[in-house]
Image (cartoon, rainbow, N blue to C red; front, side, top):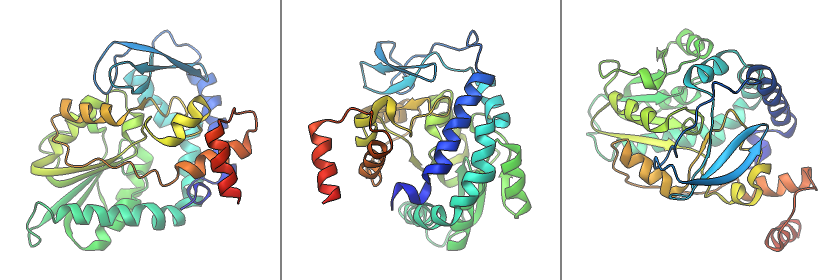
Length: 306
């Protein structure tokens, strides 16, 4: 898998352009922004990271996570995700044009992983329930349902347009934020949450709320950006994977462990496969020659070109 397969340069640059425009129109007044502690370990000890498009990022000196503070408050973020140009572009253009590649390269493998996890702690003959948090277009719901393993497949999606699209295709959708999830909404054996955690206002509250939808012995399969990743460590503020106000929480591996414990979870496994890291770095340097390169990166680039 290559970066261009799932986020083509022209589409991704347009998304970033619209994100910057959203910042200028929606977040021009930052007086309502909120200072927060580290979203991973809750420490208030931090040092300056960098500013990007007017948003300040701090580095937690306890767990080395990177996070935005001050940040838009919860209501501002909810409004942003319902009304912004960049979110609309992602939904109506970006996602549509990359759907085929994303289905094959991302969502089908994720569905198989959810299938594998479901068999680790539950009777294969039981009527299993899976809930996907942040379902978007419902691509994962499609692939999970196609496995035939789950008797009930539920999506949690706060965006009204996305929720309506999924409902019209016959999926059971809970149209609310995960933070508002109640124990009687769903009682799942497996919960999935792919690349959502970096976007939410309060990750600990978010994860604690997901537990309301998990039954006894339930398992959570989650992916998120990490500051420990090679691409972000090398590119830092120049990383296009880090675009405010979409990306607020870029936690370290240690920070994620701490966060999961705070949220009431027992960590079974953490993986950092970094499948796209090198390709992202190489593409960034090719697109922007002004980014300073280390000797190590020069070696990698020469090997890749060779």
